[in-house]
Image 1 (cartoon, rainbow, N blue to C red):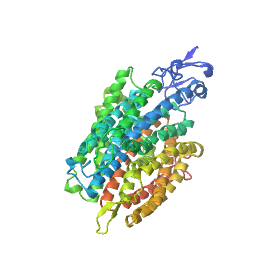
Image 2: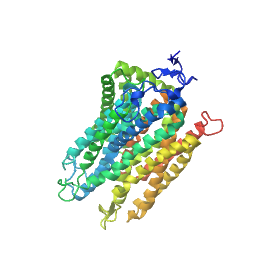
Image 3: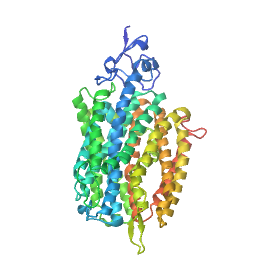
Image 4: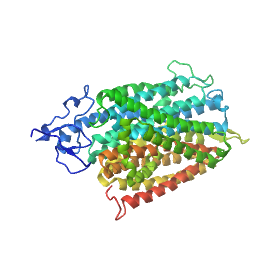
Length: 582
């Protein structure tokens, strides 16, 4: 027989190296796989054939002959697109800090007349809403992105997502030129920026299909870790652009600020990244529809529905801001979790009932993950890892300003601190540390086991969170708060270091616990729920800062970390646990 075209009915069943799983298409020449060229038009770095003919990374001979070369090129093209996703998603963390500093010097700049031109603590608290809205949008959009790769094809999703990301940056580049810009318009731009947060789920799911299990930690760590660096690019490079006019007029007549340049920076980075994905990436054999047009239709439908679900949550936030039930600290925190529930439930309902027939069938096939107990356990743990990382990333720059940027004068009035640290010299460090350690966490997990690496990181993270709660409380009591900045920065870097390592270790655990066609959706869905940390944590800091007790957020998080440590130990580490070696 010259060719075999044999279908294995059970995913993960034992198979001959020439067999093809039912989740793959194509034929494989019989005999020596080393001489096999299944995808001759998808090798190299020229114009690629979009759809791969065959894919089986677990076949070691096929992997060495052809697979690793295709996988490497797709990973190289994927990373800058995910970097743009994170950069656009989190750029609001530094834009809001720049807005606040400009407003402190010139109250006529960014005074938000549509919200009654707030001042003092009210103004500083409201600013937390801008990155928080991007957080809730990003979390919600990760839900459809968890399943989108198999519905539309990974290549189509990646380049389309990055092109869509250029839109809110274009709008921000235009709107932030206006000192009287409405806060609601910036919230709308922030909502659209959540597309970048959603991109993580589809990107990680897509890359997981290209690599064998033994290299999942490396591949997901490189894609996620280097992609996470988009946060640091925003927090390091964007402030430089916001401080340089390039010949243009400043937004303020009192102080030099070109906040709008952050939008133009990312607009210019998104376009070439999307082009790289368009030409260098491939779709898996069984992913997507017969034509690119149908694939794009699926993408835009699922993305639009996710944006609408996010919009409903943000609309609820705006419409209830003066409601008496949500004026207390407890009421505001409760509303934050209610908004997450509204967005998540609405999106799940929309996906289940309103998705077109063909992608709906694929979504429902992948919905088998909701019958898997360890899907929920790993999601609980990943909220701790990525939820903390992305939440801290969004809050860190503004926390520096709020904790160290103000002091009391002799009359008890709040004034700016002339000795405050420069927020933009330090704000990028946390996300950089967390991003760079993620691949290391993945590689260490390949060697020692993901659950073990996670356990060590949980212990370190909990100690750092408790220490930070104490330091923040003491800092609020000082006349010269900048004296505590060194300890504050050190503990925050430890938090980023530990959560970043756990990002890599938990994803490796997921890659080992589940078969590839299940692991992809689990990776996406767990990251979707975890990314709501980008909304919840900045919003919690906003509420706690408003009442002068930001340390309560760290105390609450340290308690959660303890619970995660117990769960991780019980299911994956203790003698006789359900999944040893995970």
